[in-house]
Every structure is written in C-alpha cells, then in structure tokens.
Length: 424
Image 1: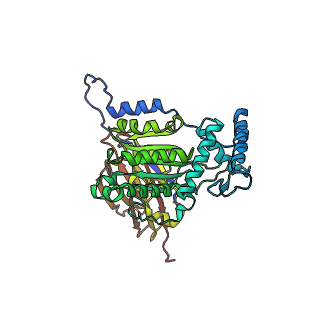
Image 2: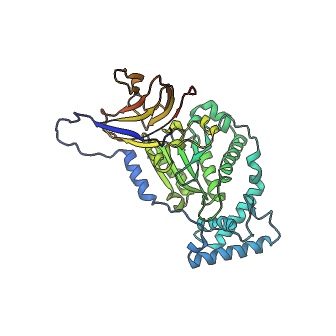
Image 3: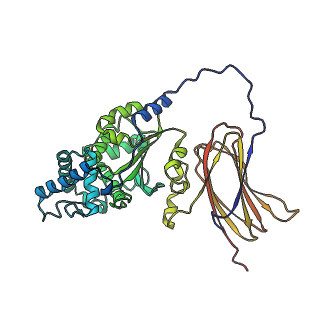
C-alpha cells in the first residue's frame, strides 16, 4: 500500500460558526496588502520562452542569425574554447547554442549590437572570474550551505529551485565573519555564483526543455541596511551575466519595509525581470509555494514535506494535497492496514495554528480505538509531523486536523506508506 491507495476524506463543518451581527467596519488595507497589489500591478505575468526557432517572429530569426554572424566575426570559427558557455560552443549552430544566444537577445529586446556587447562582456567576465571551473572549488562556506543559498528540488514544471535566506546575518558575529571586509565580500560573491552554477548544470539548454531555474528568496529577518552593498552586487552580477536564467523570482515572508528594499534594487532590474516576481507576505509561504512546487519538494521549514535527509533516498515520495477550510475539521482515513503492519506518515498544514491528532481504529467489533497522537495545538512555525505506528490488529489510521476555530483556509499535504509484517 502507498500514497496512491484509496482513502476517505471527511470534512465536518463547525456546527456553530456564527457571530453576532454588527455594523460593518470600513475595510482598511494594510501597508503590506497595498504593497502586494502595487507589486502585482507592476509585474504582469511572465511567459517563458520555448526557444523553438519556429516560434520566433521573422524579425527575431533575423536577429539570431545576425548575432551568430557578428559573433563569428569577433571570435573566428576556430575560437571554440574562448566562445563557449557551460560547455556549449556558441558558434556550433546547434539548438543548445541557439538557446544561449536567444537568452542574450531576449535580455536586450533583440537589439543585436546590444546583445553582442552583453555577450562579449559576459564571456570576458567568465574567463576572468573562472566561472567554468568554480563548481569544483572549496570556498570554505560549509556553514552557509543549505541555509543561505542552496538548490533544493524542482517546481511543478521541472525547473530546479534555488532558495535564498539571509536572516542568519542579523547575527553581527556571523555578518562580520562573512562580510567584514572587501575580500570577504568578494569571496561570498564567488560562493554565491558557485551555487547558481550548480543549478545551471541541471538545465537542458534545449528547445521545449527546462532552460531556467526558480529563485525563492526568504526576506524574514534579513538585515536590509547591512546587506545593501552585497545585494546590489549580486543582482548586478547575475543580471549582467546570467540573462533569462530565472523563470520566476518568488519573495516570501515579505516584511513591511519591502517597498524600501524594492526601491533600492529596482533600478538594477529590467521590466522583463520584474515581470517574473511573485510576492508573498508573512503567513502565506506554504500557500504561495504550493502554487508552483509540489509539497514533497518544498523544504519543511517553509511548510513542505522535504527534509535534507530525504534527499539521500532518491526522488521524493509523492504527497496528496488537500485544503482545510475555515470552520472545518478534516479526517484523513487510511484503511486496509493489516495486523502487524507498520504505517509511517508525514502531514503538514501551512501555518498550522490548529489542532492535530492521530488514532488507530481496529476493524474488530469491541476493540478500542487507540490514541496514537493525542489532540494538541500545533504552532504556526512547527514543521511537518512524521510518525509511525505498528498495529496489533487490522484497522485504519485516522489523521485529523481541526480548523473549526479559524476562518482562514489553509493548504495541507500528507503522504504515507505501509510496511507489512515480515512474519507470515
């Protein structure tokens, strides 16, 4: 039995969820709400390029050929090593080279000369920076890996996802250790490029394939003033040398001061880059990430089911998603558990703040229901629950989440597997 087995999902509305009538108060938008709406107006939905030549306009096809010709003149047909990126010769006239060239053209609105200038500067920077070999370097930032910037899972469309969280730098000792002087800052920037290069190695560079990554940036506790210089340098470096490498930029845990932060880095971004933004205020992290990424690929600290140790066991086991409406109690019934079998489950509700319990109900008449996990209030910050139970008799497991005292709808997910007894 696995997560695809039949289950019974029962939803029981709270029986008395009425409030006394009163004169409605005028609705006043919060600053964050106003910011979300303003950002949405500034950032229309982004449509990713397919990179199929047949999908290009005639003018765009012409621009691509002109860029090929100009690049050939600049570097010559024998300059393969000098005119290549990510192991792809740009003068090879194959589809992988075209994907890269189209990225530079798209970044400069198909202005050929501007695209060529950008491409040549990038090639020069990669050579000077040693970007082609940086993935293999040991830069000594073990304490930042898996915390500050790291690749983790894929979105629903197969894009690799890079998470960024700079809240650890609110600690002054940590900040000084990483950004204390110009040399330390340069070393950090080099490490940050290394993380991005690892993500790019996962791309297809193929028409119709996965040709960009997803960036998720957690703004919680981020020391805005102290990181201004580093943030500007990272943004400038990435935009100049990694055009069209990000399909979507998701900001989570957005605090009230985001508008000021946005005004700082906004001048460094093109309108096309801004169109990729998704902005999520504090409390909506799981709801936002689930729209783009399956729960089993979302890190546990962001309301998902993925833990670092899980990544060592191959592809994640699929999870089932459900919604817990305000005023409802949801019971997930996992039936068909045999005597002696062990069931293991993961369950999470975004922003919990509700009651959770688990019980085993035997099939035999007269047997008692066993409280595997007594009902308790789950804090908003608590991560996914993982537990297991070995049954002595056949029955079913019932996982309950009780949201009857809240009006807020919440996203949720669970998965399970049952291991039968080895005794015949």
